[in-house]
Length: 178
Image 1 (spheres, rainbow, N blue to C red):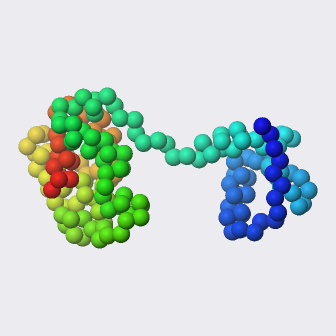
Image 2 (cartoon, rainbow, N blue to C red; image 1 turned 135 degrees about the vertical axis):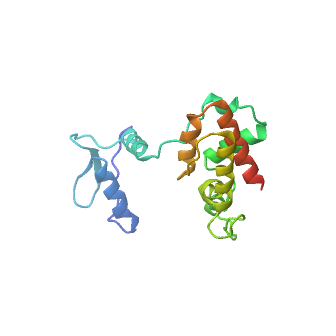
């Protein structure tokens, strides 16, 4: 389906943002001064829905990580495996996630009461959780490192053996319950 869209001069502030986006994707304006016809670059045909769809797909963020089969087969209780799936997907209910959904609240970490409660802070950057991770690394011998984000922790988790992965899942679960 091909169509031309003629519209009045821009009245809304977001109009210029839309025209800049179209231009950045290689679409050009054609037509008389009072009409707007977009067409793909190096083409005389008007734009079609497929062209817009392909341009939008290139702007989308990459999807959440595809979780390996080993997550679901970890020797841990199912509730902790499901929780780690939520954690790695950035969907567990910290105040950061709840505020994105419109909730109002204190937004402070309940362990240290000093910083905003986010996944990366609660599980890796908080002083209390950092002490626990350090102690576990000494006891069980896996290398301790401070993670900059949940995705960084997931990348590290994928490279470890089953024992380290299970310990990681259970530690995150107990930190959350604490």
